[in-house]
Amino acid sequence: YRSAKIRVNNSHFFVLTGEVEIYGAGSSFTITKEFVDVLLSLDIEITNIRLNGILSVGKDAFRHVKGEGLIEFDFGDALESIDEYAFAQSNIISIAELPPSIKCIKNGAFFDCSSLLQVIFHLTEDDTTSLEYIGMSAFQDDTSLQVIYADNTPNNSALPEGLRKIDAYAFARCTGFHTELTLPDSLETIGAYAFAWSSFTKLHLGCGLSTRSGRLPLGDDLEYPTKITLC
Image (tube, rainbow, N blue to C red; front, side, top):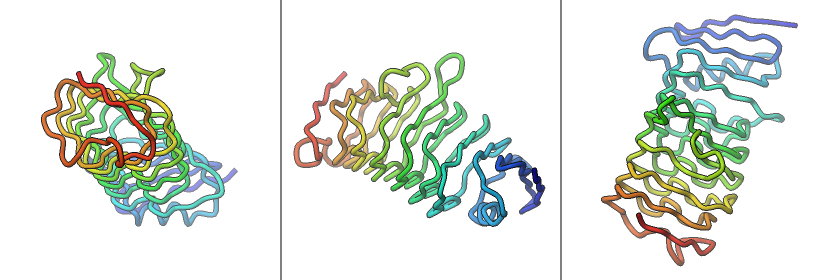
């Protein structure tokens, strides 16, 4: 067994037999691409990464990271944002379990993430979440993604209450789905082509929608026909 503790940018991580725990050092700690480059330079096969007190996974942090095996991520209970292209075009994460503290999933956060199979939104005891925004192309081209749900809807694909905006192309070309998707009543805006060319069999729209930029994902905008139900 080998272990190592390495300090980078006033933070540190502890490595033991393939498991990595990353501790935040201050109230605004972000995992940066520089940090990840140092982590991946270790002569060790990383199988688990746990975040402790980390507020954000920074822009491009794991972008283009390719591996022979998957890494299991525990995002902790403090994470507030996954920044632009943080996991884009990587193949190391299959399940993203996001804590109730998550506020935004920014543009391209999981863009073309070929290994991503499931996204799970964990809720507080009163079934709430801090998530308000899913950015442009956040999950675009995730062709392996098959399941997305909140704790209180484990048997149905659904996005959690509290979400206010889904930006353009957010779930475009997600062709692994063959289920219905329920959108929350809190949702106010759907961006252009947010679900275009995806394979959802039906979209259930919530009561709060006030803006639909561009066109709804109908007809030629989809690879497969989709039915839409309105609140």
